[in-house]
Image (cartoon, rainbow, N blue to C red; front, side, top):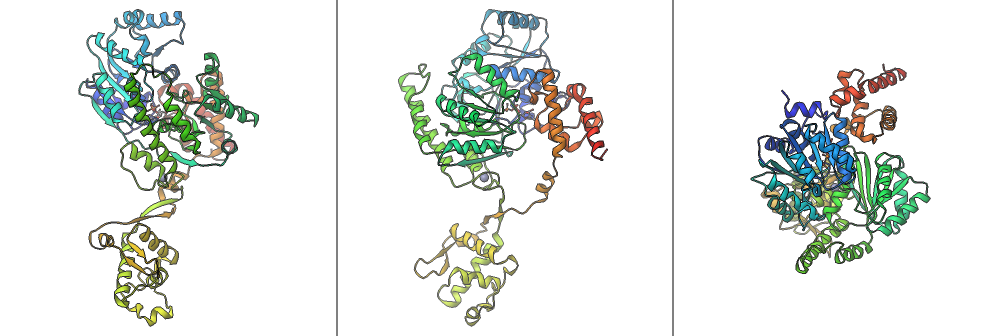
Length: 609
Ligand code: ADP
Ligand code: ZN
């Protein structure tokens, strides 16, 4: 019998669920509504695709964007699932064909644009089937307080009122705002939904804010350093898109562009050029990307600051969706704040709201802007700043953002901190006055300095206690204790003494930590025994060739993460090939032999066969 685990492995080629997936799947399978709040790239699709394959009847997925539907359906078909989509990109004849296939029960999963739900043709076709599940993707589009309100999403409610018996309803979004989350559940009339908010952290993404004096040359440099990688450059306005794209092209970068001012045809072409890796850089406004599932985007650069941290995280989150390392870089200039304010005060398409509602929305948007500006200015961990906004606990130092530096890590120094504090306390008690930081450090190191010996400080129990740590480390720890408010230096004569707070560490069990340059941990070392780069290049070329033959984007065949795993595991039998992450049955059958043969040949040539 098929189970959710067997589908996960057989169809999608994954061996374990990610956080939240299993519970959300179980809820829908047991007939309960579900509401999943997960970051972009968190794995929402599987949460409804797996129930869709296990439930009898069909599942409808409502989704706002044509590109998203096409992408998902392409990926599903490639995994051997009978799926289809209905939206305005199909001709009337194609739509009739899909309706016929619905009636004959051909599909398990149908992606539908919300405008389509209440049309006669669709209703007639779908009423011949049992609809087991209706899933609303990008569900925040239903709330007018969200970033992407779509009035057509309200049609979902009318549709749900018609379908008998009422199907299970599930909704998914990456939104952070509680107001919008409540709106979704209320407007969709979810019935006692299992609501799960998963971790919002995307550890594979590296965050950075740069403040270049001139953005254009800085951008060019960044893009050049990543020449063979796919990336998105987001700009705040159409004008900026035009200018930046032209500039990159003039510098021999394979760039293309996307914004709402371009004719449909050109937009579609440009998007495909990017999806199919014919162009490596997409320069776009935020009109590009919602639902773009291109999984091999290695970097997202924001040429301008977005209007909210929520938008930023969603746009930046389009990097590294397959889980491989990726970068999110924001180029900040003070002028960006003015541009964002202007855009908030002159919103497009606010006609749906009353004047009062517009004002309320504007106030909220300005508050969101403040949070965004805070991100650009903070000295603290950028990832931490984002996770705070999403209400999630986190380490103080992530070690993978521009403010932490990849080479720093947080370490507990409580024991040493106590020694230092005790040392200062005893020195001051013995002398009746205080010495400077250098003397404190020398005592802790057990120095034979004449002055210390004359003062009898070598008699203190703290004397020499931190000899093993070395001078630089002891000094760094002492300074950190000062900056954390446990020690203070007298501004006049430079003597060091304890503050009131020091007792928290000495008597109340408070722990102390600080940032150190990172020593290579065992886990990090293991991570680094990564793929053979030449083999990976060969596998990518092979994927590219197949993609050309089949006319699909390369990432639909295998994600970068899959190819990396393949290059690590070097499978030479179909059985081993199946163990590669992202390889399900359909892919073993379709591509198994080709890849296994190519890998075996490569190993032979390199004397490893
Ligand atoms: P979202 O819609 O939440 O932005 P997706 O559903 O597109 O995210 O998933 C992002 C990527 O993660 C996809 O490449 C998907 O195949 C992969 N993925 C999803 N679930 C798992 C899992 N359990 N194990 C490994 N990879 C997964
Ligand atoms: Zn950080």
